Amino acid sequence: MAHLWVPWRQNHGQEKETGGPEWAIASLGDDAGVFALTDDPREPVRVRGKGRNGSAVAYIVRQECRQSDTWILQSHETERIRVNGLPLVAGIRVLEDRDEILTRETGRIFFSTERAPKVEPFPGREEPTPCPRCKGTIFKGELSVKCPKCRTWFHQRPDMGCWGYTDKCALCDQLTRLDACFRWTPESL
Ligand SMILES: [Zn+2]
Ligand SMILES: [Zn+2]
Figure 1 (cartoon, rainbow, N blue to C red):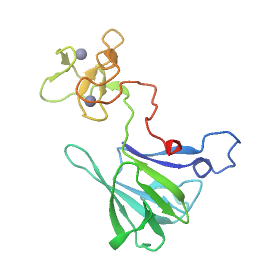
Figure 2: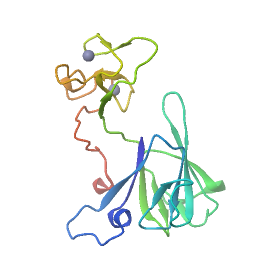
Figure 3: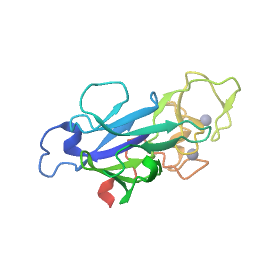
Figure 4: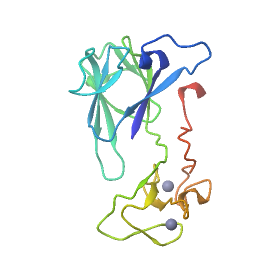
């Protein structure tokens, strides 16, 4: 799933400790298609239709595609929103990884499509699914990792760590670290 980096204080609705992290992650989860950016610092992002706090400044809409999702920023408030410093022409814009969204209500937030790999039971498919590392079949329910970048499944059982066998995915340049570190954060700007 994609996510937003929001100023830490907004995400938690309280003063930031000195020296604490500057940015927090607000997930654009897999189970919804439309998210609202709100003017409520306690809930800067919410699934459309859920929650009552704050009014929506803009919407982020997921268009599901076969290979990768497309994310679109929509708002009627074209004067009050900047993406990478430019106004929202025609009230709509396709978001790209690391785009900066700026509104008076939300401050500076960043959109990111980077995903962290996670271990989960293989959901199963109709066709037998081969693991690119060991060439064996991945069976439904087996602990596995889906590469967040190329979307290929690998075994990741305690006795069969095909995903973590090397430091990069066998088929692309995704790092295999599982400690959920994102490679990019706004702090690297
Ligand atoms: Zn394997
Ligand atoms: Zn990969």
